Amino acid sequence: MFSPYARSIVTSASASRLQQLIEERTHAGTDKAALDKRIWDLFGEEWAVMFTDLSGFSRRVAQFGIIHFLQTIHESMRILTPVLENHDGVLLKVEADSMLVIFRHPERALACSLAMQQACKQYNVGRAAEEHILLCIGLGWGQMLRVGDTDVFGPEVNAASKLGEDTARAGEILVTDRFRGALPASVRNDLVRLAEAPAGADAAWQLTYKLA
Image (cartoon, rainbow, N blue to C red; front, side):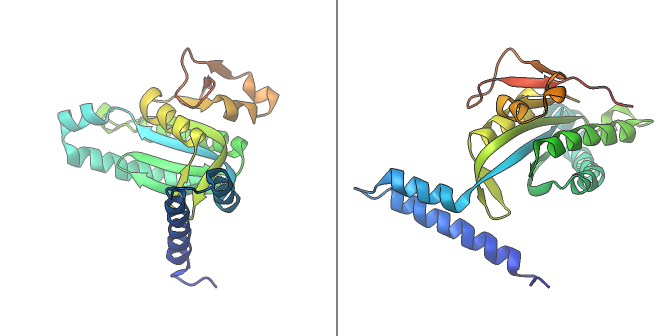
């Protein structure tokens, strides 16, 4: 049986070790290339990364107040967390109305995204427009630095964040070019290239889909 303190110890140890190595990197005469290799050897892993956002934060807060929006966040977590768990997503972080989630396989991340949009659609039925959960999703895939169960860093993380939190509109699922390349060819046919890509990504794509 795992100790209730195991997660905090592992996370703290990972973060402390990375911080120590980054500190070494600032010293004069340090072989940065060798040190970077050590960091990637220790923390480098391949994951699919998901960033979510709820559409209309500023507008809804101004119109209905922060407590109303806190309720919307609460409800979104209530209906979406089980979907993440069913698709083997690892929820690393929640900040305001945004979630950071990682998956071992891009196909699972994409399937989860569709299931999350479906859950939102079903939740919204019969509710007033101001109570609707309008989900935006950005997905990336590739090598990243994973620090315990708290955070991940890398170009694909940054690109997915931009897609999910800044670019995607309500109901959209946007993916990086690397994420698209890791999907089966049959699935790629459902992706439409965007006119612009976020910094760090060669291209970005939007999934075309229909919900039941």
